[in-house]
Image (cartoon, rainbow, N blue to C red):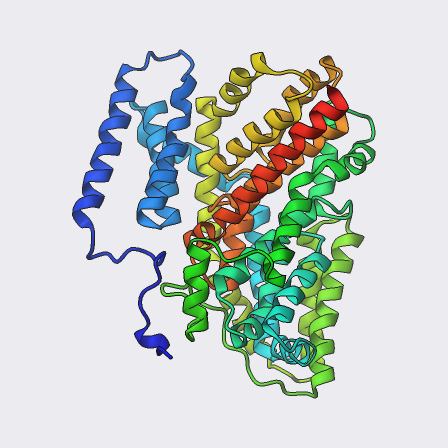
Length: 496
């Protein structure tokens, strides 16, 4: 068995700085020349058209070439800004960056993700997460059972994809490590039970948000009622959950990069090279196993219950859960107050990279909006629509937009008021179209390597975002292909 310290570097580990400098310089020089050429040949004040796709394509090329997510997003966003404002480049960059950081969603993300990181770190520090893992380990005796247990736990934590992405790996990664499961496979299963599951449950942050968008878009007076009608047609959520279970059971084989990751894990290295900084190491449990289990389950129950009590508001829920956990642990003298505060700060610190990726992703989204990418995509496809193929076209086009922008929620503020009136005019099935929109949103959140859900899943599981994205890409593409075929069949059956 190979020692982890001498194992061969993982194929998708971040590139070493001393290697490939010439190729990197050539690639960046080519991108700069291309962007400058577009900038100075484009007529100011005219629509950008297909040129609006360039920043997102640059992000994909750089990310695949370098395996570094944050840098790829920054280069794509800076390229788009150069196309938009070559004469006031720095001023526009400063304005957009400031607007993004003042955005209510970004502020909400920073607080929720930071507090969630601190919340998980407190449970790690107290040893309660270790107690939960040990108790689960008594029930799950095999590798297959550990993977199935991860799927089931992910389904049970349905209230929010952020909570799922951080809590599930915290509970399961020690167990899956013991059975030689790669962290990449764990991240795939966690991500597959995050957004894809949240859209299928009316009591989730996704359901609350999209039901409000449906009302504001004029599709219905009761957004939640329409949302519930659309749940059977949210095909990607159902298919992604089914594929994750097939992978867990072993009926779906390891494909491509996932196969290489699994071979490495079975050789004794479940954690890949270049993994991000882990959460603070857990102390040994200072109470009986059952008390330790209670100290894990109670804070989680309070988190879910408080979030539901405050109308599915995860920020209020995590504030209540954090305060409850501090009191619970101090009352039992499990950890000192200063140690709990250190754990909270450590949890915040471990979330800095994913938060930076999401923030730069928002800058890219703002750039894409100003370039008119979403409107261009919709306007280009509208002339070719018929009621029968509308659901499939809506899914594919919106999936591409969400994948390119990483904005699984923001894109639909623009697209719902455009797509739904077209569907109503064509007399197409509105629940089916809503199902296609939500399927596209969950696919984008699942597959995009810089979406908030994917970044948090990779962080929680201890892999780099690109390691996670590339290993799960074949499975997400299979899910997307099956979903597209399903929407074609449903479109001809219902609307044909």
